Every structure is written in structure tokens, then in C-alpha cells.
Length: 160
Image (cartoon, rainbow, N blue to C red; front, side):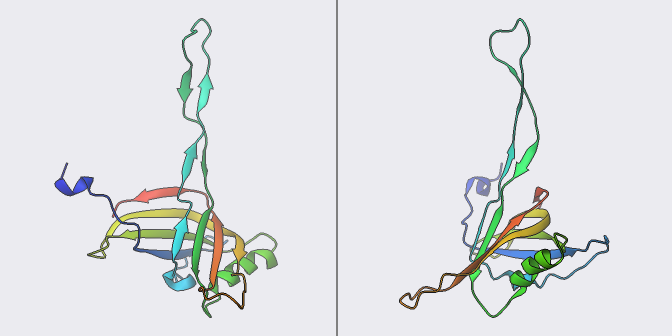
């Protein structure tokens, strides 16, 4: 184990890349969605539900086997701009009665000082299920934040 393997990464620098997967299966290299301007990303989570097997005559414990895996909804938040790519992606889903352009989303975690990718995750065939615009408040001085919630069909940890 190298000396730097035990130094934890900061969580302040990351980029997002979107790659389209059209319904007809052809490739689409369009990665312009929201141009990676996200302030927060949460929900990088996979949970495996174990299968419990009870064996007759064995009263001390049960056998545990791997079960199905489920994935959390990934939530992306960003400062509101004139860019409407997220809204267009979400509204395409509602207008097309459930059929939309799926996107593979790559989340690259960057080293704070060198800006080199130290870890990457990929969401397979992500689909937007919720779009939320910022609350409007004339008394506030905060930046307007919008968010999009993505469900997906797989989470992979990629080699940097």
C-alpha cells in the first residue's frame, strides 16, 4: 500500500459528463446537458438486499446469500442560470409519454490541488423523475438553486 492510499479525498471538486442513449440504440455523444455546472451531487448509493436461508437442524444463525441490488435516486443541484437543458430533458419525458433519451452520467471526483480525476462513478441509463425550481422570495439574498432527480439502472465505480 502506497503512503498516499490512506489520505482521504476532499469532496469539493467534481465534474459531470452526460452521454445520450437514444431509444433506437444508436450512439449520441451529446454531453452538453447543463455543462457540468453543479454545486452538489447526492445519492451515489447501492444497496444489496441479502437473502436469508434457514437450514433445518442448524439453530445457531442463518446462511446469508447475495440478493437483488437497488440504487438510490441521484440528486443534482446547481445555481439557476439561463441554461434550460435540465428542464428540456425532463419535459421530453412527460411529452413523450414515458419515453425519453436516457443518459449515461459520469461523475468525476477531482483532487483538490492537482485537479486530476481520483475516482469516477457512472450511472447507467439515467432518467429524470423530478425537476425542482428554486423557491422565489423577494426578501432573500441567496442564489436560486434548481435540482433534478435521476433514477438509473446501474452504478459502477470506474478506474481513474
